[in-house]
Length: 214
Ligand code: ADP
Ligand code: MG
Image (cartoon, rainbow, N blue to C red):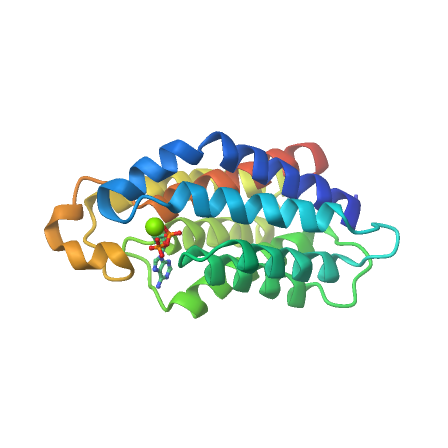
């Protein structure tokens, strides 16, 4: 079934709820290897994005415009580095579905992959550098590969969620090459990257959405 702007409104609410529920935990993770604001930043950004998308008239707004509204709202709400990273992700997702009035499952998977690429392009981080890319990249690859192999939307995002969780867990053993944590050298070993942790929550919320929609 096609994914409409109304469905995206529901998706952004799901994401905002799950991020809000983990806000304090994400701040604790960032407190260990950063400045302790990551939960507040993601909560503010996701809440602003959900409100901005929710305020649009779904009958008159294409998915690309909804995603651009999410990007703008997220960027305005967040002063931390996650702001431009997620804003770019949403803009790239919007560009990937330009001129569509609703999204096929395939287009939704493409938009998801575009988000991960946007984060990578904006932050210039590669996998293994202890950032959110360590969750986003394997998740996007898992979803795209599963789609190419004939999986359903639900299966694609179930695999993406698992890959994101594994990718997040793997950041525990890494030294950080990007962001604030890169200044701490070996002291960050043993700690999960907060951006990878929030990415896993974000992607799990998409998987929840795909479970009902796919
Ligand atoms: P800040 O470091 O400005 O306080 P946040 O606390 O919101 O920003 O986000 C920190 C997270 O941002 C890190 O845990 C990491 O996952 C991610 N991050 C930082 N720099 C980059 C980058 N260049 N590319 C991708 N992700 C990054
Ligand atoms: Mg921070």
